[in-house]
Image (tube, rainbow, N blue to C red; front, side, top):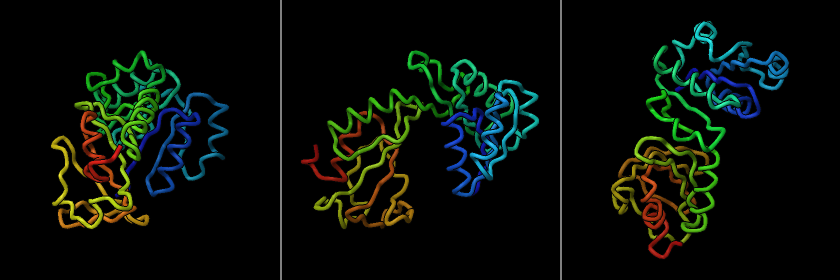
Length: 226
C-alpha cells in the first residue's frame, strides 16, 4: 500500500530516505530550510517534491499537507528541531506515525512518546547493538530500535543445516516476547502464516524484546548457534 511520507530535513540522510521511499512507490515530500540545498535536491531526488521552508513552522507544515500524510520523518541535523517537528506532527496535526533521528546520543532519553516520537533512530545505539549482537549471536541483525518496551526489529537468516529448515512457523519454538513480521525468500515477501515452511537462505524479520535476541537466533539456527 502506497503511503504519503513527509521528510523534514534534506541532508544526505533525508535525501537518501526520500529517494528510496519514492523508488518503492510511495509519495514523498521533503521540507528543507536551506535554499542552496533545495536547489541541489531538485536534481538529486527526481520524483520527490521538495519544498523550501522551516519544518518547525506550523504554517509551513500545514502548507505541505501534513494533515494528510501517513508518516513524518524528522531527520534534520539538530535534536531540538527534530523534537519540535515530532511534537508538532503528533500533537498539533495528529500524524499517525512519527520517526525521529537522534544526533547526540546524550539526548536519546528525550525521544519518547511524551515528545511525540513513535520510532527513534539512534545511530550510536544501533551500531553498538550490531557490534555486540554480531559477537554473540552470529547473523542476527538489528534493523531499527523501537521505543516501546525496548523492542527491536531484527533480521535473521536461516542457515544451511538449521533445524528450522523445512519446519513450519507453527512448529518453531519462538521466545514469548517475539513476533514474526515477514519472511523474505528470493526477493519475495511471504506472509507469516503458521503453515509456511522455512527454507535455508530465508531472511526472517521479527519484532522482539532485546533480551530475547539470542533465543530467537537459536530458534532459527539451532541450539549451538553462537
